[in-house]
Length: 111
Length: 329
Image (cartoon, rainbow over all chains, first blue to last red):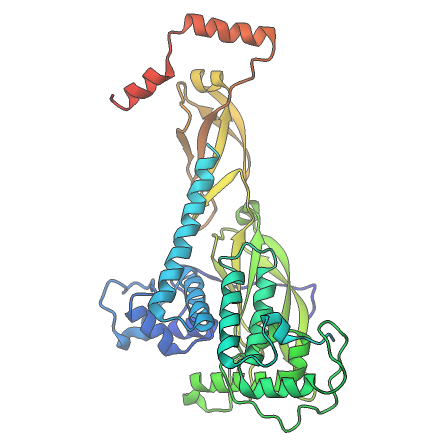
């Protein structure tokens, strides 16, 4: 590839990735994503998200950038530590909480 | 290429059993987990640990590695190493979930030993996902990279050169590590944690299957002047006491350039002024909040001291009383 050419990509916004795309991006099976959404460990952001979760609608589900980061962390912790999904989710919840607190402490520290 | 001592990396002896290897890997993985570790080289160490664990936790790969290490050439970590030609012939590895994308991040040493098996594993993993379209066509793995940009880049857009180490098939069909540079357009209006997908820039597919994609995760460089929340940006606006008390029109630097700000009189510290639409641009642009901070000039000259003394004398003001009144005490 010519390293001088500039390439542009597609922005992953609020409701962009399909369930297959998310699974591919995390190197996990499609059913891994299904199970994590059903168990409330991973959130989708499509317009029908207020309705009950049904596997039949899975093709319509959409995921945002935040879900991609979360899903990769979950998969990584489950794989590295042979952790069960709930424990991995608890760890990721705490990581997200720490990030929020760091941001708050940073802004209060400057006052 | 350098010989890699996987036992040394995991800190275990050559006779360690599977359980000891698993324990050592998890202990070190906890220490160097990039989300938690404060070690500067955490990400690199984690890749090294994954590589060592991939080999030593798999009986077939471990046996092949042990045979090579015991080859009588005195292989030691860091020493130059050339694998004997066709040394890998006859070795077969079953899939263990390791992907070509993962293998591509590993060392050249690893690629030369297990490149073929990485490809086999990718086939194995991919075939599960594309069963309905036939086992031969396998989509390449997706790759991920982080891109750090300045807040100003989110306002204007930018171009970034990204160095990637990815898998490529050489003429004889072996997976080899390939260094390449991509110049990527970073559009304006990005938020922290948002991704850009570059279609087809991941691992190549197999059997005519499409290439995987490359996902770039956007992260902002730390900047003590700004706090960013989605597309909203908060900056501290330092004011002299007289500017805060009397009101003023001041020039304030912002990520999108200097702006004239009208400060109302009696502006207390902590109060925020909102500049609508001057946050990070987007379909709905964010807002820029200027948080007032009153900065006292030092009383380091006779004249300055005289002014403070006049204020103390002429202005009956006790901030403790004012704070109590504000709290309704």
